[in-house]
Structures are given as structure tokens and as C-alpha cells.
Image 1 (cartoon, rainbow, N blue to C red):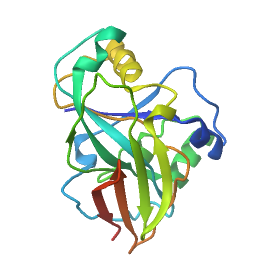
Image 2 (cartoon, helix red, strand yellow):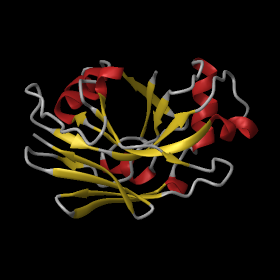
Image 3 (cartoon, helix red, strand yellow):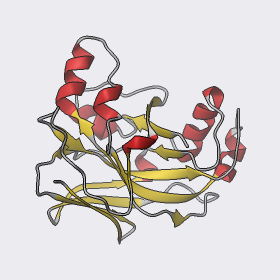
Image 4 (tube, rainbow, N blue to C red):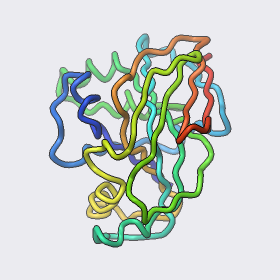
Length: 202
């Protein structure tokens, strides 16, 4: 199983971090050891003092494909979930300033919390409303119809470089409203009004 992530896929999020809006998907990956499932707690790592949450929709690949055509891309997934892409923002900023890769700021153990997958009619347009709550207060409010690159766009792009296999998952990007977490915080993810993920920071 591979974990792909798309950065800066919402214009307002790119702007809030003073990043340019990309003209093609910005891809990075996380290892399988990054996964947190079944509402597991997130253990705040000792190497960072600034962990940020990034709530987003995750899709799961349903069959193997390579060089997938745009008109066929919707056939390659049929489930979605809510995920938190946890980011060591202080480390990421230091590495970016040096022009170095920032995988360690994104792919550390436990940095990919994910809820249970829901069935999804992938032939319909991207129109999933999702929200992040921190300690009961809404901090993110997005819709996948605001993505710069759609689910299908992402699948087509990734399949140029990687063979996509059943079980691979793709974090599709976060809207504005990302922020810090502290020990004791409780994060919740909601898709179309349904709470599907809860994660306590310890």
C-alpha cells in the first residue's frame, strides 16, 4: 500500500501559508508507519514544537492502473474517508529554507490519521462537504468542488509516474484553516454532516 498526498490543492490554503498556487499537483508520500486508524490517539513527537493538523478527504484506489485516461479515472476508486495530514511545521519551514526535501516533516510515525472508508459513487462530480473540529469548534470548512485538481485529475497525474494498486490511498489536500495542536486537544473530522474521525492529541 502506498500513501500519496497532494499539497496546496486549495487556493486559500496555499495563500494562508504564503505559498504559490501550483500549476500541476504537488505530490509527496508517507510510509505505511504513518497510518493511524480506528480513532487512535496521536502521540505528540518530541522532535517538534509546532505540529499542525490538516483535515482532508482521502480516496482509496480500487484496482490497478497505469497511465490512466481522464475519462476512465473515476473507475479507479469508489470509497472516501476523512484524514488528518499532521505536519511538523517548524521542521518543514527549516528544511524549505535550506532547499531540502521535507519528508521527515510530513511522513513521521502517526502523521496520517484516517477514519473508516465510506462508499462513494465516483461517477458523480466532486462535491463532498467536509469540516474539521478542534475541541468542539469548527476550524476548517471545505468542499472538494473547490479543489484545484479534482479526484480524477490527481489519479491521472499520479498514474503517469506510479502504478496505482488496489488499497493505495490518496490524501487530496486541505482547505484553509490549518493550525497548531497541543496535548489534550481533540480533533474531529466530518463528511457531509457525519462525524467519521476522532483523534486525541496525547
